Structure formats: structure tokens, C-alpha cells
Length: 457
Image (tube, rainbow, N blue to C red):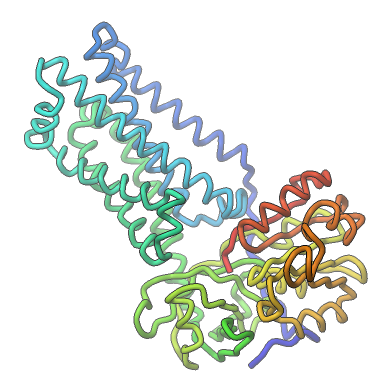
């Protein structure tokens, strides 16, 4: 089983498009934030401001409410909801998750510090003595402290310096503790939180928020993948060497003609064999869906990706998805430019096969450091001939094998003179994508025509 660039075997159904706008999401988030602030005022939040200790305690209470709300929003962002994925795309959701996560930790730290200092001033004791008293005598404070420690561990692992030094598997494992941290914090809030303890309406409201957030997690992180895999029974059908460090895995299953997926999307894949079967990794499909098989292409970038070339035919697969909106659904112009870097060509190769267009409508620029890093060359050449597409390889050192700044605004305009009138799809290493983004801004390409996602291949 191998891919063909000369015909499509079939046509898979397209994922559902949801009638949801970013403004709707922003309004819902802001509206709930205002309700939370209003409840704090209703429960006498400003009544404590007459004293220094009361003011500090009041700040601690407000930051607790906002920090808890931030943690629940984090759950929603981690739920892999198809609604949010379609509206914002995974890059924007990931960025929001990152910065909201840091803000949440600072708010919860503010709660811990404000409450402790405020109580200490009110009791006339030292901060350390008050902290010890709170942890050892107040209900569930020790549990909440453990939860805060887990939140801090997750935040520290997300700092760029630490993230670059942690394997994906370690980083992902640490992040799973965020669920435990939220549960521990909920038990603390349920017993001693002002909103929970004294106001049944507020208590019901907050419990509703928790149920909604965990409901999205249950539905989309667990329910949807279980349903998909029970229905399609995915398995490895073939493994093909594409380059010295790159393999393609062909995936077969039942009723794949009913699996709604677009070129440019990706799944979280688990190969249920050997060590590491429980860890999921994001890989884009590297051929247009055809109803008979899916293909992913994996470059050896770490311990788990290196296992791909040892997979055997028949190995069972557990997949979650599809995710991502680097798809033809975002297309707004007749002509399209695809800019790929290294293994980032995988979703763009699928788009080159799937996107409608006549001669001259599709252009692919492929940047790679070495010719050995170029994958699908024969397929890309055949697809370009079949589709009447323009294909340009930029391979080698800048200023030697290729022009200096080959993806700068001057050269991009040289390669594609009508670039401002095209949709531009970009996928590759972060540095390359940042370079292309700057070039497109310089060339006045509207942001609505630029579609990119980070390295999800």
C-alpha cells in the first residue's frame, strides 16, 4: 500500500462546520467573569476594605475566584472541543492556554499570599505561623496547597527554558497533573469558599461551571476518541521508508469512508505496542483522505518517533481527532501559496492533493536544509504535473545554495508576484514560520489570508 499522486481513490466526508464566531466566545467568557465579580461584591467583598488586613484578605478572595475561573477556562481550552478548534485554530488556543495558565498560577499565588498575610495581620501573628495554622487546622487547605504546588510545577515546565530541555513525554506527563490540581482546589473551595458556603445560588452556579468544564473534557477528550476507535478499529497497514530518518505509516480500518477529516488536519496517535503505547503524539495526515486509508509521516525527532520504523503490520492504533484548521475550509482566494519547511511539508502535501484549482492556482515553496530532508519529492513532482501547480525547492545553505533570505519579502514576491491576492498556508519549524509571517506582513498580505499551525507533524 503506497500513495498515488495520479488519482484519488475516493472522497471522505468533510467535518461539520459550526456556526460560532470568536465574538460569541469572548462574550461568554467576559460575561461569566462579570458575574463572578458581581457575586464577590454581593457577598461583601468591599466591606473589608476599611482595614489593611481586611483589604489584603479581600484581594486574596477575589484572586481566588478569578484564579479558579481561570483554571476552569484552562480545562475548556484543553478539552479539544471542535467548536473552539474551528473558530480559533490550535495555535491560538495553545497561546491562550499558555498565557492563561501563567495568569491563573499568579492569581492563585495571590490568593494564598493575600489570605495568609491578611489573616496574619488580623490575628497579630507572623506570616509563617499563620501559614502553618491554615495548612494544619483549616479544612482542605493542605489539599489546596498540594494543588497549588502542582499548578506551579505545570507552569515551571511550560517556561521556554524548561520546555526546551524536557522531552515531550515528560512535559506531557507533568501537564496531566493539572487535572488533579483542579480537583484538589475544588474540594477546598467547596468547603471554605465564601461563594460556596454561604450562598446556595452561587454554589449552584460554580458547580455548574465545574460540571460544564469537566463535561467538555469527558465528551471530547474521552467520549469522542473512544467512539471513533470502536467504530473504525484502526491498525497499521504498511510502513514505508521516505528518507533515512523519516517513515510513512499507512493506517487502515473499518468504514474509513465515513471518517470526517480534511487534508491539513492531524490526529493524536497512540501505537498500542511496546513501551510508550500510552503516550499520544500529534501527526498530520500526509495524503488527502480517500476513504480507504490514512497516511502519517514521521521524522525521527525523539524516543517515541524513532519507534515508528519498527512498527509491524497489524499493530492496533488509538487515535484522537481530527484537529486543526489548516484546511481548505479557511480558503478565501482562488489562488493559493503553500510554504513548507522540512517535515512541515506533510499537511501541505495533503492540501496540494485536495485543494480545488486549475493550472496556476496552486504554488508550493519547499525549504529544507539538505536534499536528504526533502520528503515526497517524487509525489510532489507528480502532483504538480497533475494539478498544473508551480513547485519550487529551496534546498541548502542560504547565501550559497539558495539566495540569502530565501523566504524574505523580496524573494517571496519574486517567486509569487501576486502573493497579496493569495491565501497562504505555512507549516514548518517555528523560526521559519516567524520569518514567513514577517515577510507576509511586509508584503501587506491580509492576516485573514494567512493560515498556519505550529509543528504538529
